[in-house]
Length: 374
Image (cartoon, rainbow, N blue to C red; front, side, top):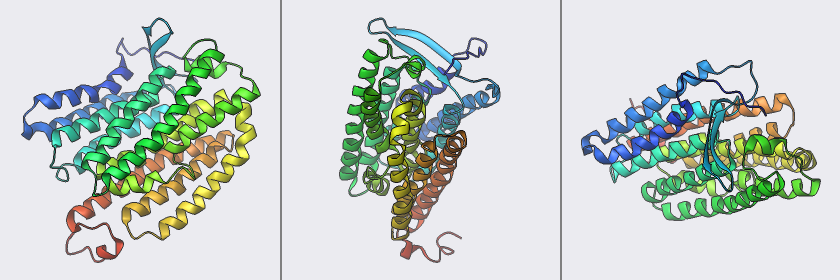
């Protein structure tokens, strides 16, 4: 994948978009209590406004990475601060900046305990997720990938429901197991791909079939946990049920897309032979997820669990499109990722509004909402 650098009057555009929420999170600790909500909303809206020009300035006729920035970070081993976007990562970046202000708004009255810390955690989470989508250096990618884990753990474990600690620890352990394998795969690629962490260079390197097979399964577990693919999905319903509404929106709309993004960004271009060899297994698991998630959703009495299992089914369509291994399948998968991010995020926002008024997520308790929600 080639690199196309678009100069925007010398503005480090992507860096500003990625790190503005982090700066805002720090700023929250210096404002008065009454201004915390408005400050968090202002930062989230500013980041959305800052990201929108990227959509208009993006050159759709060009291939490769755009708005690239590259600065030497560590000399040995060679680790760079390198960021950029293409047609895969830009829509996901825009989805993230669009949903964050909505998460702030839905938490406006729902969160009363440690509000300052909650809003800061959400903004830190936004920086980590944006960093995952723009990183062009594997170590930088891994730093953002792991940085996302802690805020999500806190959102569930501190501001979640009665069984929040169980759900948070389960999420943490599942994700950590995948992250260990991802780190091992990155180190192997460094030594086998020319002693570089540059993702664009590693995409072009030649790897033996045996090495590809081992790397494929390491990537598979790391990304399948995030999607989540069957049978690595069991953490998701618990996390959704216990997470606050904003946490559920982040989980469903953005975090799940990180796994699918990993398949598109790394597995397919770096490990083409292994991908072809294991496609029947991936297609089979995707079909199981589609059917299993749909039937489990039909059996749920809790609205959040219903949406969680429907997400397993919907993301099955995403992985099915990815491993169709053709342009139409990949385009459809990316479109489904965006569609799922918007619709499922909206569903969780609706459930949050309903719960705030009826104090129940049970379907049986929410018939006849005309009185509590005229």
